[in-house]
Image (cartoon, rainbow, N blue to C red; front, side, top):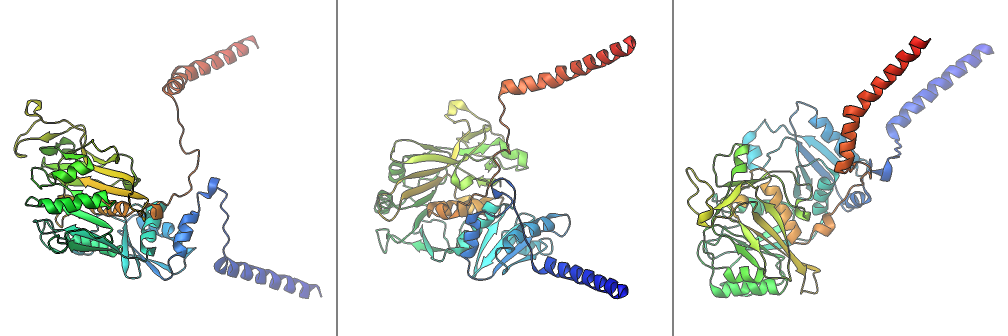
Length: 442
C-alpha cells in the first residue's frame, strides 16, 4: 500500500510539472508595477492597434551582427501581445546596398511597417514614433496634396534629379496623393485640396496665379512654400500675406564641415527648435543652397521656427565657392538664421480648427537627388502630416516616470561639489583622528 502511495505521489508530481510547463507556454500573465505603468503600451497605442483590422508586417533593416536585432524583436513583441497578427522580419541592408538606397534606407535598424498596401518608415525605436506610423496606416481616407506647375517648378512625377517623384512616392505610401495643379485650367484653388505646395518656380509666377495663392491662404487653406535663394519667383505678394521675407544671399554654415561636408553651401541641422514637427526628431537634415527667412508684419499668424542654422553661419552675398568669409560691410547677416518657419492661426474655414503654413528656404532637400540624405525624407513627411492637421491623431505620448530627471540649481551643484571635494575628505580625516585618539587612550 505504501508503495502504491509513493507511485501515486510521483505521478501527481509529474502531472503537476507537465501542467506547469503547458501553462507557461499557452498562458501568460503580466503585471506592471512601474509608476504610471510606463513599462506597458499606452492606452492610445492599444487603441491604434485595435483600429487596424488586418495583418501588419514589420520589416527591420538591421545587420545580423550585434544586439540590434534582439532589441528590435523585444520592442516589437510588446505590440504583438496586443495584436497577434503583427509579424516581424529582418533584412540585412548590406546584402543589396543599391536596393537599400533606392528604397531610401539609410540607417541600420530602420523599420518599415506595411498594412493594407501602404507603408510607413520608423527611424527611432520609440513607442511614439512606432505608434505614429501605425496611426498613419490606420487612416482610411486619402488626402490630396497639389503641387503648383506651369512655371518651371519641380514636378511631383518627374524623374530628374531636381524633381520630387521620390517624395511623392513616399507620400503615396502613407495615403497621400500628390497631383499637379495647373492654374491655366482652373484659376481658383479648390477647397477639397488638403495642401497646396509651391516648390521653386524658375520663372516669375504671373500675378493672377499669385492672387489665387493669396486667396487660398486668406480662405484658410494649408500651404507649403519651398523658396530658393537668389531666384525671383514673383511671390512677393504671397510673402506679404504670410508676413515672411526671404533674405538675400545663400546661407553658409561652417558647422557642416564638422560632418565632413566640403561644400560650404550646405546647411547641416541636427538640433531643432521645439515644435510638434521636430519633437523627438534626432536625425540630421541637409539643406543644399538654402535661403534665410525672417518673419513679421502679420500678427494674425503665430510664427515658430522649425529649422535654424548654427551660430557659425551667415548669408553669403557672393558666390558660394572657393575661400569665403563673413563680410558685415556687404550686408551679410550672421547666424543663427531661421531656415524654416511654421505659421498657424485660427482657421477662417468652419471645417478646420487651425490654418497651417510652412515656409522653408530650400527646395533641394526634398528633391530626388537629396531626399535620401540623413533625415530629409522623414522631416518632409512630418511637415506634410502637420500641415494636414494629423498631429491630433498622431500625438502619442507614452507614460513617463516623474522622477527621471533631477533639477538642481547652480548653488546646489556648487555645494555638492564642495562637499565631495573638501567635506568628505575632512570628515574621513576627522573620523581617523578620533579613532587614533581613542586607541591611544585605551
